[in-house]
Image 1: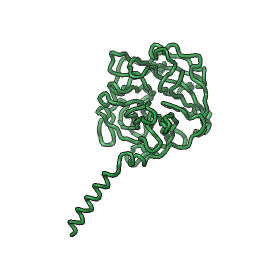
Image 2: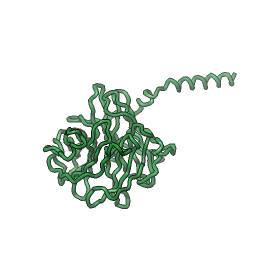
Image 3: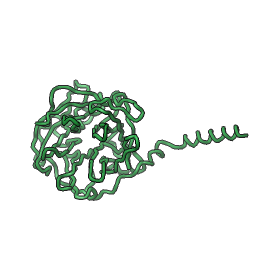
Image 4: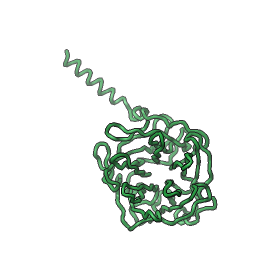
Length: 320
């Protein structure tokens, strides 16, 4: 009888496991924290200003800007280049929509790396602009950082500036194609230093985008977005992470799978009315780390998402 009961319980647990669908499991992820006002964003990046307010840059005509004094209520703050960015049109087919900015504040000025491209093309470029205030119309074009052509196996979009423990500047970037790349920058100019390029993540040409690297404790954590963006409520973006003791890698996920071989530990995915969360940024604030991202509402509109990041006993980040 005990053996029969044991087999019955095992069978029951097996069936119950099958009934826990991926969607049900994903429902355990928290919803975005409360934000109000002008929260229509795509590919957000955020910096905390010296006065304690927040400046968001995101994909839009001539790079869209938003501000907040409390990280809850956001308002439109114009665009970085209200008079246009004619140096980008070679890569945009003449369009004004510029993608995936990365904004930071260093050495008393704001740095803005951003992408110029068109869908389904790797004829792309990443540019740099700087500003003393971050306000609309104060940005100075500093030049081309890196470009990709149709003959290249990488795509020069989705930049992220990171400074390592030795004070060296790096830019990680990339999407699809042969994956995420890392190049070194000249701290004096913010532009590319040398011709080296390191592959730090990839999925064999599969969907991987939006790299962000941050140092916490003894590790560099690399966040990326897997799967498909830009399909409204049908988007399947999800946020993945791996880590390394060295900024140049190798990065591996929680199970030890290298990120150059498709590895990545999922920390946020679609659930309920939150569709395709991704193109994440990490903000270190007074009350801890925050994951900042976009997601799609049921009606397909892109919205700003903000959640806390905590770390478990093994040092792996989780969304709270």
